[in-house]
Image 1 (cartoon, one colour):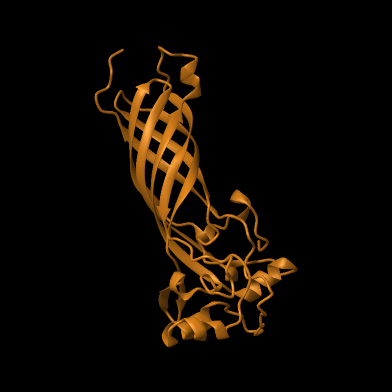
Image 2 (cartoon, rainbow, N blue to C red; image 1 turned 60 degrees about the vertical axis):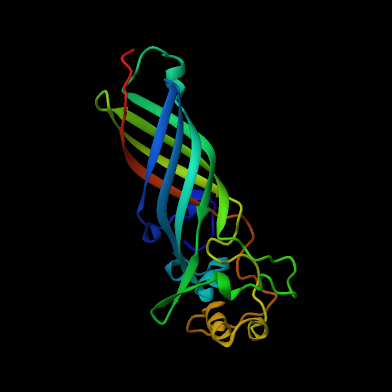
Length: 245
């Protein structure tokens, strides 16, 4: 691993973190439900996990960046049960479903230095908000996303269901990990940040390994493209006011 890829091709089990939350579902019909939920998880990554270190992968390994970001999200979705559209009056035990809608998530990328975690957004590590980079705006820590969920729900009793599902989230930011574009001249940190934050920024905007690679402002720190994150989860559902029909 080492070359960044889309979706599950970039999966690394060492970055897996727990995901939990609660949902409320309303069933206007057998084949459709409306769902609202609130969830929490942590996303994380580290260049030190890279195994193959040739070409582009070597550049990521030498960059030696790492981060973690706690994410709290709220969403509203429509769930469609395709099989129920064919058997309107028969409730099968197994119900595959797909769902989508809209959500909002709050994130806060952090990096560790000397055993302490620091918020990266206030450090403007890629010159966000600096006059020298007018196209790089300060990114907001609360953003919209579009969820796409696929799963299978199984009815244990009239009131209890269990389900397994996976949710892919398309976001509209490239800064969940605080990495997007090119390096900047470190002197700019002294110009626009407090002495404390400037000192932190110069230590965190790149973390070259033992080979002490030096990066110029024209070199890419990250690669543009909107971020996404995926979760897989097991759910227990209790059905209130079960209809008798």
